[in-house]
Image 1 (cartoon, rainbow, N blue to C red):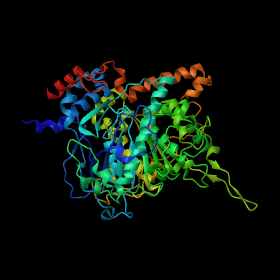
Image 2: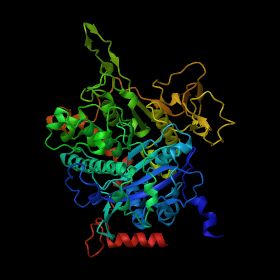
Image 3: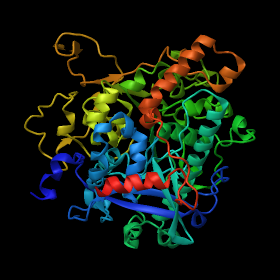
Length: 611
């Protein structure tokens, strides 16, 4: 029996995307020198000479190009990096030998450099595809959220996934624009999850780099849509060069010029990054920000991101990690609300422009959950989220008082029995590890519910997206009989309104409820299985202490100690590898030209991958 005959049964695999369109993917790496200055270069970013990202997009029906491996090149280093990040060398020793031999066979269900499907050919009402920018979390990369990004692309969106070079990715390779054969390897930097000024400073440095990269990426996206020859021809992507046609085909096809049209999303550290980026951009001229002597991110006037971010910018946040936002230096920004609640707009979109989805692990992380509630509220500076915060007083006009405006509450939900890594590809690829270590169950369920919620969220924000497939409604929430429909995967094989997924009401027992004897739970008639709304009114008092609160003594010693324990405990959810102490010593140029990877570590990887 040949290797190919039994690989499908032992190699982790992704489920197919359920949108009506095939999905293409293009890898891009552009020298920063070709983009120009969008904001001041942060400290510790002088070694970053390029921005790197992957584009997921709807492809033509006849697309049959080769797929893309989940592991980015160089694969041996990627295997080493993910082994370190996941902590497999010490926590799941029994599978360590399996991982290097087979992980490189995993392919993402996309087609490399496929032909972009013209929006008009898809029968959509718009001339350009809706466009998403998604920021990864700790240990992530441009490919680590391929299922979410590819799923959105299969429903009619172009998704840009940057790979951050702030040492938060599992590993990243920066090519030298002057010598494409030369490169610098950036391994993941191990930073303890402790409440100290030193750690906050390190995380702040990373966010500054991430925000700077997003500003550069936004500029590159706009110029790609304009068909800019200098940008398109500067692509350094390897191992096989990306055809110029694969980038030229986006000219005039992505919806990135009209202000407020682009969608921003992120996971964990990426969600925190998105919050800081959109707020820094929107409030760049706010008095409290303008006088800030060292702002996180100050994009120049008329930059692409300055033109794009408005109070109408849809924002979705998956398991937002709040710690980096709570630094002393970020206090002026923290106290301002997300643009959706803009205090200078008479009738802002309010909470309808914000979607936040938590794993159960993050929902039960009390301090982070209360901090999240404040961040997605109209007044983050308030210690407790009140109903009054959502009421905008009416203005006086010609001796008449206009009725007060009631702002909508944000969509904040969690998925039962889910872990932090379930929000990324890791949950699908390593369900046995996630279940054993983090008690996360049914990894495809949280991804399915995430995509379902994001699609409806975008519909309700005026974004044209494809139907939600019948097979993705298995958790309920619709009155339709799905049994005879769920195998239908055509353009019309689903529903175009999925309002139940975003209903903001608590699950309560009522007539028609069915009890799940095995789990001891009540399933509310018409509700969605494992999907729960979070009411933020009254939350906030148990937020994670900020750096300022700790320095001033405003936080009690007991509360500070509890928050410290919880943060350190959740470290294992976000960075499993932090639990083991097998950290390689930094190499010198004579031993191996990569920071943090020794000759022995490289030899060990080589041995395992060739065994």
